[in-house]
Image 1 (tube, rainbow, N blue to C red):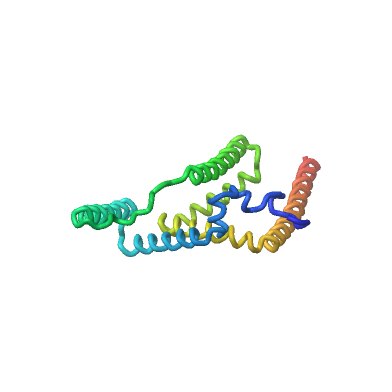
Image 2: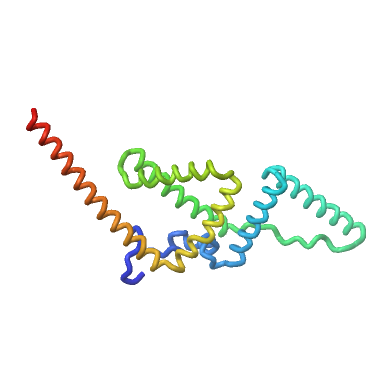
Length: 209
């Protein structure tokens, strides 16, 4: 990390924070073919939904029905005509991929539950403010767009912002920390002014009484 200060005083790299496995590789474009594939498929799905008016359930059902019908008729005709069967790859989800995805989800859910507990018990005021602002933003954004567009936009953000941040990490951290320190200084000055005014008002009321 060097001598540069990092956001939240973190000591680990972004790749390690994201789990350091397959998911982190995809998010940070270490496996560009998978990342680009996800973006292309997501864009295609969004365009199809927006233009055709299909719902997710009806589209998935139609696609699978068409796919299975084609493969079934192909296999039957191949058996009759003594031709090779459809060249299907071996459909298999490895235990390693499942464990990495499960570990990634579990870690982030545990972080979310821990933060929720601290907020509910009044232990973390800063986290309460951040979550409140985030929920308000989600509420505003949700009122401006539909769930499908929001989901597509979220996927694009997840697959672009972390990679861009990792590329320009030093510059982003320096700018954000500088802005945070200035805001914190302004807050302390504003708080001191407010406290002094309240104390002055209390003293004036005591004198009048």
